[in-house]
Length: 384
Ligand SMILES: [Zn+2]
Image (tube, helix red, strand yellow):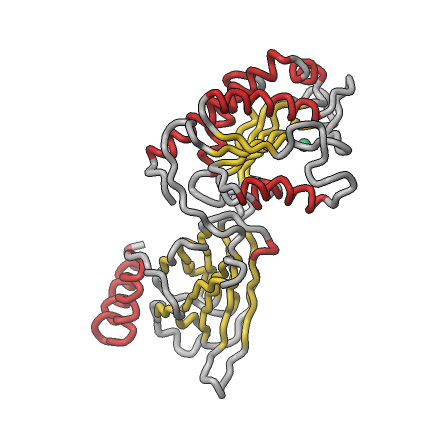
């Protein structure tokens, strides 16, 4: 350990004083690691620390750009990593949160210094370069929102002598939904809250052992949530108010789901709450769970507030909050959650879910959760 340290220190000394250019690269890189980069209109270059690896392949520098599509309003992040020689790349999203993109670069070293490049936070917060060994490195992109496999691309480009370009690794990440500015204040008065009772009309959703239909319970709870929220002075947008298909019978799944998110997006709802009832093959499984899709700093907070209060008032097993890519919570621009209130496949819970008393308890939990959310969001500053 000590021997490694002294070798490291003399190498650092060499870099700082005997190899002026490499020393500057290291200093620049440290600087970029502590101050956030401003929004840019052109590619930004951050030199990576360079070590003398006598001819072996290595990463040379990284450039990045956030491009905004003027028509669609969506943005794309492009990261370009120059390498001295050809490399092989493989990539994957971090399975638990989907908000970390991990790219393995095989055949190029990153150097002795772990590098950190701060981005503008629009699509990603930072990029970390991790040394795996002397000829392999790893790039971790910390994204500001969750993405899915279809939202990013990683590929390599050959050197281009005519245009004076070396080998490159390109990482493209699409922004899932355009970001909105928030200004959350405490209290439910004047808030615009979208409530989405799952299923409806030709789509019953899950059906219990005693034939209770999911669409009936979600609508009953939603109507009670609406009444409580309106009493508290909030404006409620219901994706459906009766037992109907939201888009229309025989609609495609995407049309149906788009219809559910459209009203919330167009009317600039503050939050979106989708209500569903779970089902499972084993009748003994039960409990309440809430799902979020992390598009902002507030989705997890909203999920926690709703889940905590649903468990408090409903008293079912706490199955916690989970990240998930459900369409309605991914495509709504505002913080949104999908709550699975209970299990219709569990006979005890099916019975409870059919009673007005229990439906009212769930509605009270959701409304208290929304109230808690606005209080806590305001405490966090209320903005992005
Ligand atoms: Zn459902």
